[in-house]
Amino acid sequence: MKKHNFNAGPSILPEEVIKQTADAVLDIDGIGLSILEISHRSKEFLPIIEEASALFKELLNVPEGYSVLFLGGGASLQFCMVPYNFLNKKAAYLNTGSWAKKAMKEAKLFGDVIEVASSESDNYTYIPKNFKVPSDVDYLHITTNNTIYGTELLEDLDVNVPLIADMSSDIFSRPIDVSKYNCIYGGAQKNLGPSGVTFVIVKNEALGKVNREIPTMLNYQTHVKKNSMFNTPPVLPVYSSLMTLRWLKAQGGVEEMQKRAKQRAELLYTEIDRNKLFTGTTHTEDRSRMNICFVMAPEYKELEKDFLEFATQKGLVGIKGHRSVGGFRASCYNAMPLEGVQCLVNCMKEFEQSH
Ligand SMILES: *Cc1c(COP(=O)(O)O)cnc(C)c1O
Image: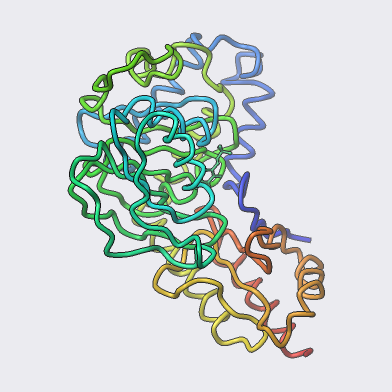
């Protein structure tokens, strides 16, 4: 049976990316060796990381003066690298979910942290608006898509200070105005590639401004200078990410990804709102297009396990909600075809009819 993969991360990748990765593991470029057993400085690998960085910049329209890096450590290491490199005295954080809170916790090791607003007391069901950002902070840190709670900032904020964003779970799902940011980072495993590589977009002239020594590996300047090749980069995840970027370009780029994301989200949210058995979990204006969360309506609460089982039988994978929200979460990343979401919607309709 065809499986529809709604996993939150690591998550769905285009079929051809998986196949190309498998091929490269067996034999890269027909040289009789696996990508796993060649030097990262070989003539086979160097063009791969160079093209990945160039294509990344092209597809997101990254302006001059910014570098794109491929590092290890996940988005979680960026929670620490960001303040290490950018927080001199004071930074502002918007608390929109547990990832945001984890980022804030690390920043407190480096200076004053101002929580400009928080939706924690409402279990992060919305994204705070109209908050004030002190003009003397080094940056405002935001999480553009809250993977666990299903809320998303769908536009680049207008603020009076440089932005830094965790875009782990919505990178490449819409065009972004990179010039508003000093840094954008994320783990690849939601929308770009397999786990093991972390992307960082960094504004070169914003670096080197803090009054502290930074360990070599945690200093962005190290990786900017060496084009992500200071040490051995995560070779295979970078290769797969390049395959995804090529796929993305062939599909029509981020504008096309945005169009598809809107279609998928509209289809599923319309059914959540229509179907008497289910209800959404977030304020409608902040609904994420990437992670669509919903629960059983209160009077049908006891059907939760049955629906999960029913959906599993129909080939739907990974729709169990995160424990902090419960219910269901359908992660609809770039590689999710509309048919996958249609299948989930059909499943919800069929389940409703039998109850
Ligand atoms: C998954 C996720 C993370 C954690 O990423 P790791 O690469 O596992 O460290 C951080 N922030 C957001 C928004 C995420 O979705």
